Image 1 (cartoon, rainbow, N blue to C red):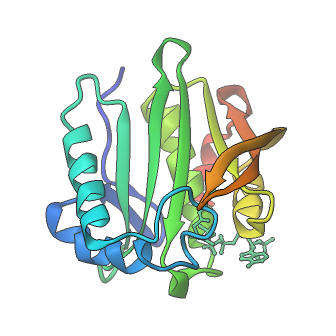
Image 2 (image 1 turned 90 degrees about the horizontal axis):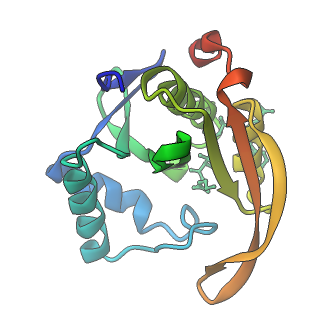
Length: 188
Ligand SMILES: CC(C)(COP(=O)(O)OP(=O)(O)OC[C@H]1O[C@@H](n2cnc3c(N)ncnc32)[C@H](O)[C@@H]1OP(=O)(O)O)[C@@H](O)C(=O)NCCC(=O)NCCS
């Protein structure tokens, strides 16, 4: 495995490891019911958010490292606007899953697509992965669009595979193979 090249920089964003003090910024979006509408977690209490950041920090100690929970920050100001992650869930098969989440006031500016392309590029070009998957609620139209613009293909509808605040929900399964990835996409 190559060295992990972090932070990941894109034209407008820097994706970096969390630090403990990030918890307040994380809590701003983690406690927003609209942001977590399609997530199996949240809205977070302060304790939930602190625990999430603590888990992200301890995951950095894994050897080899398999979980990359990263803060999404604005390149210029450095402000934290969200989180994203890629986890090598099937190391033998070089398979990973990824996800992302942004503050509500930062939606609709192309940041979701920009970070998704960067995370997938990191997975293939830095982690040497073969296949990256993501799941998404069928009603989460913005995320469906982000995954499709990332070049991922919808492979299945997983019936009632997630329970969101007591309600069973279907998920779309999206995936992209290394052979389908064009390195220059990450610069888009
Ligand atoms: C999903 C999410 C990251 C998208 O981020 P974003 O920065 O708003 O996405 P982008 O600006 O890159 O937009 C991507 C596409 O979705 C479209 N889109 C964005 N919001 C939309 C909405 N509410 N309805 C329909 N389309 C929408 C955009 O128009 C764009 O498509 P286009 O280029 O064809 O016009 C953001 O909405 C979010 O953080 N949601 C809450 C957390 C979440 O659901 N995470 C995903 C879990 S699977």
